[in-house]
Image (cartoon, rainbow, N blue to C red; front, side):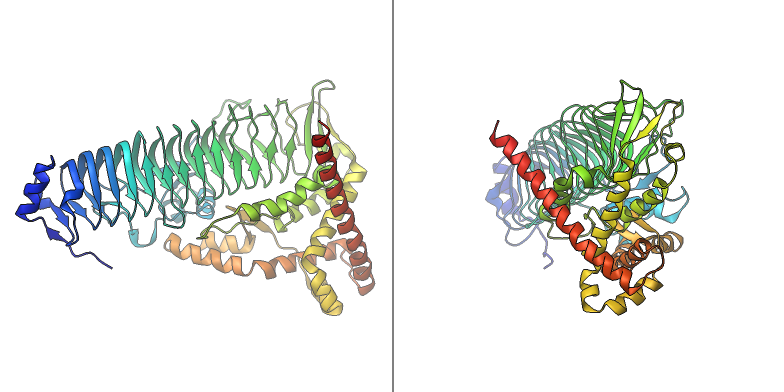
Amino acid sequence: MENTWRALSAQEIEQLEKQLNSADDWNLVSVVDAFKVDCVHRTHFGGNVFIGADVRIANVGLLDGYRLEEGCRLQNVGELSFTGYRFDFPVEVCNEDGSHTITACPDMTTTDACLAASVAADHPLRFMRASAAAYTAMTLGVVGRGTQIRNVQAVRDCYVGENAVLSECTLVENVFVHSSADEPTHLGAGVIVRNVVLGLQNVVDTHAIVRNVVTGSHVSLTDGLRISHTVVGDNSHLACCEVLHALIYPFHEQHHNNSFLIAAKLQGQTNVAAGATLGSNHNGRVNDCDLVAGRGFWPGLCVSVKFPSRFASYTLMAKGDYPYEINLKLPFCLLNNNVHDNVLEIMPAFWWMYNAFALRRNAQKFVQRDHRKVVSQYIQTSPLAPDTVQEIMDALNRMRLEDEALTKGVERSKRAVRILKKTEAEAAYREMLLYYVMNTLKEAYDRDPLHLLQMVKQAERKAWANVGGQLMLQTEVDKMLQQPSSDWKAMHERYREQWERYEQDNLQNACFVLKYLCDAKPDLEKLQMLFKEGVDVVARFEARADAERARDLAAITNM
C-alpha cells in the first residue's frame, strides 16, 4: 500500500531539534502519520527525505535523498546520500581489452550476461536495460522495509531491498541490493562495494573489495576477496582470492588462499584450488587472451595455465605449471604435466573410470545445495546432459584417429602429448552415453518400445549451448541473438519457455544418442540389447561409486 506523506509539524520539528537533529530545510523532510518523533536522534537532514512508520534513526552524519521504508533502522552512519542511480555501469567480462563489455542492470542474470558478452559491440544486447528503465527513473535512494544499516561510514546512491543488513561497511556506493524477508542480503565488516548489483541472499563480508560486479542469488564474496568487472552466477562462493574480468556461471567455488582468476569464462560447477593462477599470464604480447572452460572444470593445487586456453567439460588438472596454451576437446579427463618426461598426459573419461563417486555426488550435491526461493536463473547441473553428451560423442569420433592426429593442436608446443588408456577410455565414453540414455529413455522404452524406436529413427543431431548455466538448443539461441526482445524482462520470458521445453528437447537428444549407439541403423533387436546392457552399466557404475566411497571412509577410519 502506498504511503501518504505529510510535512513535519512545528511541534515535531521542535522536538527533533531538542534531540540534537538538524536540517538544511525541514520542509524537505516528509513523514507518515504513524511517524514516531522520539525515534530520531543526532542526525542531519541535507535534502529530501521520506520517513516511514516505525523507523529508528540515530547518529547519522548526513541523511539526504532517501525514502526510508517501514521498520528500517539507521545507527551510527557517517553518510547516507543520494545524487542519482547509475546502475547501467560497464562490466568488462571475459577479457581485459574490453571487447566483451556488457551493461549492467538490476535484473540481469548470468544468461543475460552470457548472451550480451557473445555479440558484436554494436548489438542491442550490449546496451539492454531493465524493463522501461524501472530503476534509473527513480529520484530517491531507498532503504527497504526492515533493513538495518549500522556502524557504516558511507552509503551513496543505493537501492537497498527489504530486510538487508549493512553492518560495519567502509563504503557502499551505487549498489543495488536485492533482498527480501525470505532471502536477506548481508554486507559486513570493512567491505568496499562500488558499482555493483547484488542478488538475493548475498553475503559480502570481511574486507572484500567489490567493483563493477553483478551477482546472482545466494552468492558469498568474503575474506579479503578482490573482485572487479565480473559476473558471478547463483550459488557461488568466493573468498581469499583475486578475480578480474570474468564471466562465472552458477555453482563456482573459489575460497582458498592465493588463487587468482583473470580474463576467463567458467561455465558452471567449477572449483579453483589454492594457489591456482588462472590469469592472463600468456606467452604472446597481446592483451586479448582469455580462458574458456566447460562445466565441472577443476584446476588442482598451484595449477598455472597459459592463455589463451580452452578446456572441455569436467577437466581435472593435476598440480603443476602448464607452460603452453592448451586446446582440449576430450571431456571428463585428467590432465597432467609430466615434467620428468616433458610430455602432456591426458587420460580421457577419467571421471567415469576412477572418480565414479565424485561424478555421482556432483549429480546430487548441486540440487541439494540450491536453496533459492525465487528462481530467476535456470541451471542444469547433471554431469551427463546434452552439452556434455555432445562432447562425448565428438570425443569418441576423435578417439578413432591415430594418436598423432588425435593430439594435434591440443598443446601449442613441439613436445609430445600422450593419451593414456585410450582403449579403456573409448569403452568408458560409450558406457557414459548408455548411462545417459538409460536415465532419460528407460521409462519410454518400458512403456512402448516400438514407439521409441520410431522416435530414434527420426532423431537428428541438434547443437546445444550452455547459456549462463541454462542449456538451450543452439537454434533457439540464434533466434534470440538475431531478434532480441526490447528489454531483459521479455528475454527472461523466452528463457522460461526454453526451460519448460527442456525435458522434451533432452528426450529427443537422448533418442539421437541411442541412434548413434546403434551406428545410425536402429532396430528393435539393437534397442533390446542396448537397454539390457544399460542395466548392467548402471549397476556397475553404482557399485564402483559405492566401493570408492567405502574405500575412502575406511582410509579415514584407519588413520
